[in-house]
Length: 460
Image 1 (cartoon, helix red, strand yellow):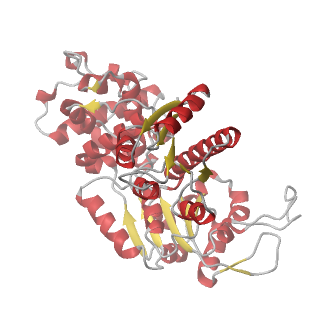
Image 2 (cartoon, one colour):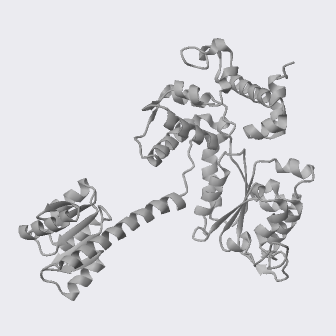
Image 3 (tube, one colour):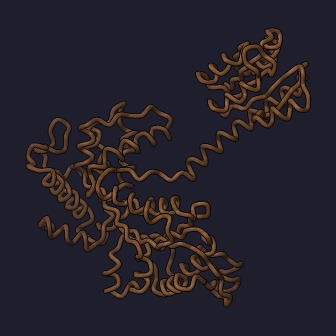
């Protein structure tokens, strides 16, 4: 229910306003001085304040000014000694409106309704801005993450191009966002392009735009990503999947700071800072003839490698706690505690999907667990497809998948879990290595290396 606070030292006025507003189904609180009114604002959720100007102890204008340090609740100022100067001063200090006594009933109700609507819009706008524009923190205290943060602080204010490498889901996009946020271009747009998600025949149109009629479906002119990012930052994600013809045009754009739309002849000046990212080894791609060496050297002025989650498992408690708080907040439920044993179980899992997989896992645990997230929950919900059934049955004891005592070191435990996980996935996919690599989110060559490392063989 909408709550309105009345601050006025005249009891008849407070009683009259209370009767009117309660008849309109508003919840009403009232006090007779400004100091008590400020205390109510600190303790209660107030949607609107009706405040008299001439009061004992504390003037209404002083209450309005002091309230802005506590809340953004809209104020309607009321007074029996109204002047234009008073109304202007109230507006200057942030009041929504000013009403003279005796109050006109219709004007009062319309002003109250409009002020409440504005207050709601302001709150919604703040929430949306927080969701849309806020760049999440890079969480972790491991040496790899500390080095990344230091590098961002040094590199971001410059115009140097940056190449970010790392596995899928490790946080390359977040690094790019912070490079933009801390740069001198932060007030201009950050434009993102996922090169792997755009068909090779359309990538040039996506990047450079096209003129009307330049090809069959070009029914109107289109502005490309380079132009959209002018004076800002262009983030080319999965640059290793870009076609060679598009690479040549990107190289020219970087060299000359000019582009030409597909089907066009006019050269267009562009001023962009390019940040690229890839999960591929570009040097190997160069050897295979899939990537241009000259473009690689243009992009890799600064190299930032984002370690996989398995390489920084000590950061998992910090990241998991943050995700849990965020997800519980999104679902509007009390934050669930992740027990110490649950954290150890999370650290022991093979995170082939990295940060993205961990977030999905925490969301699953928040939804399916009770008030606390335990190691039993982690083991039960780690893989809902039931992959843990392939583990030796003697290891399932007291609801736990693993008998931790049998492993001499943490690395032994991780190798064991990784071996069993990969073996299950290969069996599930009838040892189709390409399909398995895509499913678990690693490169095929990496999977072959794991198969050789663990001595895995297809069952007869």
